[in-house]
Image 1 (tube, helix red, strand yellow):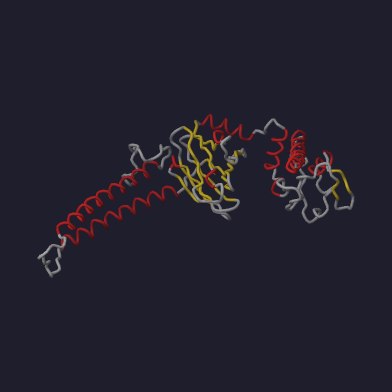
Image 2 (cartoon, one colour; image 1 turned 135 degrees about the vertical axis):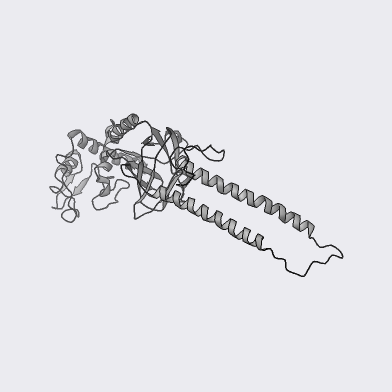
Length: 341
């Protein structure tokens, strides 16, 4: 086992506070390499300066035409650096393998990266999602809550471009690549709140793609999980959460009027007449939305009938959840109208 895996390493002024099981290994190897560089660099630069002065060109001076050679020096400056480089490679490889071998019994957290925020989903289905950062909300960033002294596995994916998940205090970093899942693990060792950054340039607001990681005791972590799965009291906010949690957003676009996906867009539809697959027209109101949730094929929109059948949510949603979804969909009309003013 590497000596770098010591129980405790003194903190260094140029490192952020460490809070994971990787800190000792990463910080010590970095520091040893730095001092190796210093030990070699300083004497070499001093010797270069001395030799330039001592053997400078002077009137009447003639250098020896014979090439000088010293076997001991040749062997020393070949063998010693080779040993050091091999040792550095070995320590780096062992550290990389430690970070790559995910242990069993981890707490899994799904992380989704997209321009320009992070979304966290816990094992119980609870979610936290960051929002666009501005001066008004920078102090209210949502948290990724994790328990102390537990192995954590981060399951990462990107919805658009290349991102990178980095928590400096944990010395843990891994790219988030579109089109595949990437994995990262670590063991938080110190309670506290730590920064989380995207460290791969991903567009205009890359610098604002930040979040916080809060490491807490096991009991507080369990409470955070319960809170994360709770639905907001405000009907519109509750409906917005359900719209995403129940998978509505994967088919029904709520971002812009007229935009659609596998299913029709709801934005800007409220209070209008919509044409059905049967050729009839009905009002897009509370009754129509509720019928569409409970029995989607009964009054399917034109162009979205048999080609894109939607499953019924009868028995899956409570009455108050359906009312919250209705309130959210209704609010989309208000937001569209406000945007046109």
